[in-house]
Length: 237
Image (cartoon, rainbow, N blue to C red; front, side, top):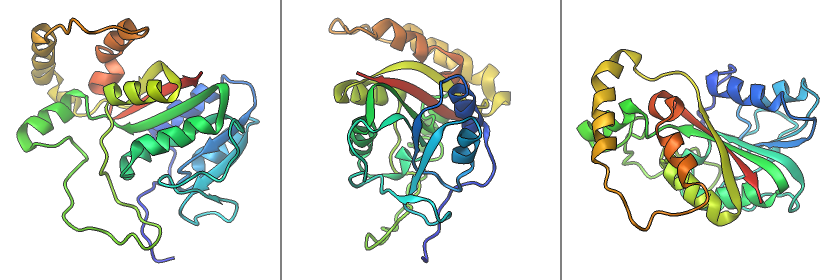
């Protein structure tokens, strides 16, 4: 298969955070999609979980062919957990991907999404200077859709959008996490700008909802403001 995929081979920070979180869960059936090079799947298997590794690449013989932009080849409610690490930013229709992740997880199960954090201090500064979030450099070459394709970063998903879409699809965010701080040396300059933005933020009289206080707290949290990757955990209703 003459396709270049942008997955990494080492167990990076966001992967370690997700594996650690799932080490606290009882053994269950987990879908890891996109599985990349398979290192997260192997780490979870070592913890006693039954893991199905899904991807459009053929890095490992045991991988199940799963296209994030197509129908997942699994029955409804057939997993306890589904994790999608650094995958949703590569697809054109992230809402479809989220709907399939939620569909295949049983009620009460978990869905975990990690994606480049477009709301951290540095990405906000980058967008102010360049007009687009950090790690989402515009591409002007349309890639072939005749087969498996890694589009690169084409679909920025903020916490606000994830919260809305997950809620509409039947899953509630229960926690927000992140990995390493991006551009730590710039914090003294960027943090005051973010604080000023909070102070000037208009209050919407229509704001309401069961998780509004949680959302406000997460918006001010260290993971959201500093982390390179955002890690969102949601429970399926």
